[in-house]
Image: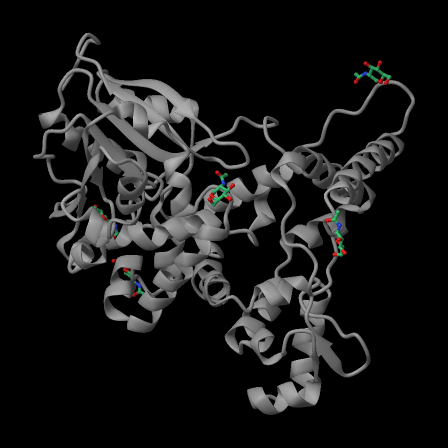
Length: 453
Ligand SMILES: *[C@@H]1O[C@H](CO)[C@@H](O)[C@H](O)[C@H]1NC(C)=O
Ligand SMILES: *[C@@H]1O[C@H](CO)[C@@H](O)[C@H](O)[C@H]1NC(C)=O
Ligand SMILES: *[C@@H]1O[C@H](CO)[C@@H](O)[C@H](O)[C@H]1NC(C)=O
Ligand SMILES: *[C@@H]1O[C@H](CO)[C@@H](O)[C@H](O)[C@H]1NC(C)=O
Ligand SMILES: *[C@@H]1O[C@H](CO)[C@@H](O)[C@H](O)[C@H]1NC(C)=O
């Protein structure tokens, strides 16, 4: 129960913390020692990259980037390398030109969530009909707030390109505010501003109070919530439980995190005709997706009794019998023998001490050659991915800390974790999909490696 429910909303955290850039290290490419000033060099790069980027869009009759309501939200994956380079070069240019105080102010961004919280709480984007505009007065009537505070909050949001004032007193959409009309995105923003934000502000307090803690009850969230854990909150407050749960759907918008992406991240067909135990598999979302796409695999989904209650009814008729459920806690000794065990985002919300316990719990049934597949993030080494994406990963990593002392792990940390559990857990390969960090770590149980209890 504890970790079933617990691990479930925490998946959302993959998408979380985008606003928590406060601590991001600012790493810049080392300057060329020749005489070309960096900004000149950057300007040349930007110019070349933009030309290539736009050429591709034009050749495919695609819209150029724009904040306009109907502007494109995404660009084709085949030019993602150009977009990456442009985002990093333009950010570097921008940040080079800021004086230190302005740079700190930009990243501290303490007030940004105020207006974001307000417009999502009052669902202001929903009040504006597509392609149309409404006045501050109308928004004032609909929210019951005076026009002054409405204008103040909205103009702050506008300074971040969320909403726009096309003519005095009138409010219209940008593509960002339009995006916020998607119900799961609004829920996610609500979750970020009302759960993640307060808890994040207490992370450093938690670190000072409980240095090096791996306990889920010694976190920023606890400090921000009168000693109540996420578990306490979701079991006692239906409203907040709903906020945790409904925001989770937003994860589908993170490249590579949608349930549909589970089928392509690994060569499941190569496993042949097997039964897979999906430990901590929630209500079988991933299992159902896999069963749909791979006709010869069967899946047993394990999770807490509460989590799986009624889940059977969500399995499509044609998959019945191939996706089954079993009440089984994450820390309980594994009782089902199978050739493959699959964990989807189960380890990121656990401190090492608890992650090791989960691995050890599988040992009683493992036989030589068994595969353990962990779908999780393997953190890229610094400077190996675009900085703009690294910043997001590092924010998510900190958000995982605030809820449960969980974390993202580097390759050496994954190896450490496996070795700490048992030397017979041998990392065979890490699959990392393009444009996403959510990969698969394939681990083999190898009895020839000197085992230890
Ligand atoms: C600096 O730029 C020059 C000319 O583009 C290049 O040949 C050289 O390798 C660069 N040096 C460094 C340290 O990047
Ligand atoms: C490009 O888009 C325009 C307007 O959206 C359309 O009229 C035209 O037929 C398109 N051309 C091609 C080659 O698809
Ligand atoms: C958190 O839980 C652990 C393990 O149950 C316990 O040892 C510790 O005292 C708890 N910490 C607090 C602050 O209650
Ligand atoms: C939280 O728990 C600690 C120890 O369990 C206690 O000393 C403290 O007063 C509690 N704080 C609140 C706000 O309940
Ligand atoms: C995830 O799946 C969607 C839908 O099938 C696809 O468009 C997208 O390219 C996939 N993303 C990744 C990173 O695999």
